[in-house]
Amino acid sequence: MSQGKEVRLRNAYFITARSVVKDEAGNIVEVHCTYDPASRGGNSPDGRKVKSTMHWVSAAHAIGAEIRLYDKLFAKPDPNDVEDGQDVLSNLNPTRLRS
Image (spheres, rainbow, N blue to C red):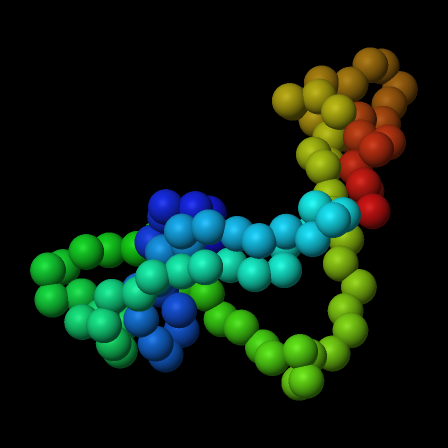
């Protein structure tokens, strides 16, 4: 979701983020949106399409999860570009796991 871009809120409406409120640390604490009441159920009468559908879970029903962020798996664009005596695994990106 980004400001000014329209997305579908699952089982609801097309919404557009208009502004955000951040705390002292820069974390987003509120997102102010507008919605199109004619888009209830996922379709708009004028045929607009959105690129994504968002689903949300309330904080009361959320569970913890481990998230891993990866970079490119290989250090070279062509992982088969190896030196003599090496295999494709020699081209693994050593910083592929970011967190």
